[in-house]
Image (tube, rainbow, N blue to C red; front, side, top):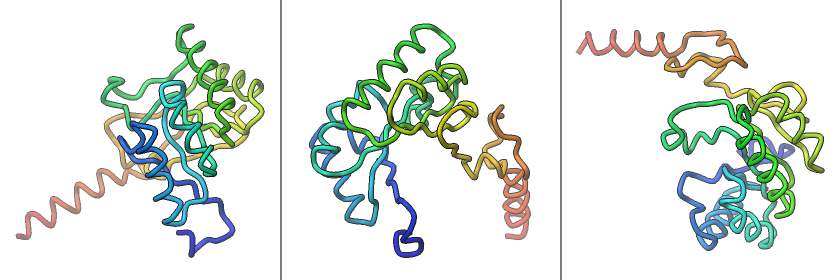
Length: 180
């Protein structure tokens, strides 16, 4: 990817369980950079703050990720909008503040209520990038499988699929199975 599009910022998403300890976080962040990433992103706030600080201290730019944490969807009991309850709201603010103090260059806000995403965006000195968190974030991400309808087991309010790829894939696979 780095060779194909050298003018774009390549942010490597730290894989699940690759940043459980500070030493693992730094080691794996360095591996992503060696593979062509210019920065790394990991999910969480205060619970991973030492990892974030260590990655930044090692000279690697770090992007935070708050709200819905896809790598923790099972532990969280599914996809849920965050910030509706006051304790979630306060936790998101504290996590955003902690990430900024750790030296992040940006924060992804995924499935955070629009008012809380707006508050965080106005509060922090780094850009926020929303995924289903309203229009007040500094930037937006649209996840391609969401747009293509590849995840039919839940519906998203922030994007209407333009294709039903999951059903089309199932149909093609069933057709192939019937041939063998």
